[in-house]
Image (cartoon, rainbow, N blue to C red; front, side, top):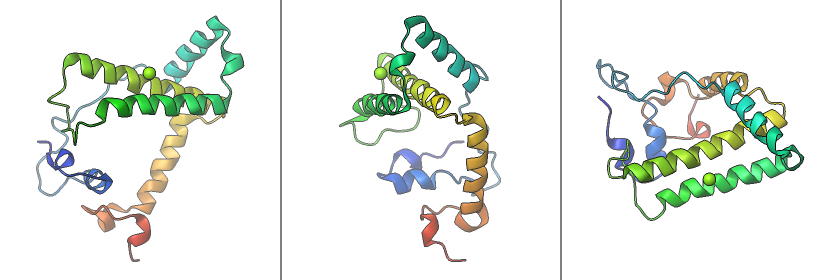
Length: 156
Ligand SMILES: [Mg+2]
């Protein structure tokens, strides 16, 4: 079963501490939320490229503009959470309309992120693999289990 402490404590430290959940032998992944397999990141890149080509918008979609557009969309996501206090995982108190609005804004962030990566020639799916390998080295599970400390706070 999912632990509930992620939504019950304020602050980033509480969120970080949610990344380790294997205190007992129970299968914590049993009812974990999962995504659909498609579209892939490459599918999203291609769909957005078609969308911009059809509108002759590539002339506006330089990296810096895409970055600013993405940050603007992050702001739109933030507006949905603003003044609500902490929100529990699964958003149990949100209406269907609010959930759909969130789905739209998160999609805007992802679409711009993918296009920004494309225009910067970053192969995002492969870059994620490399970065996660680095994260595993930086935060060995044996060392950081259940702790929200920053990597600089751990002793060798
Ligand atoms: Mg938006």
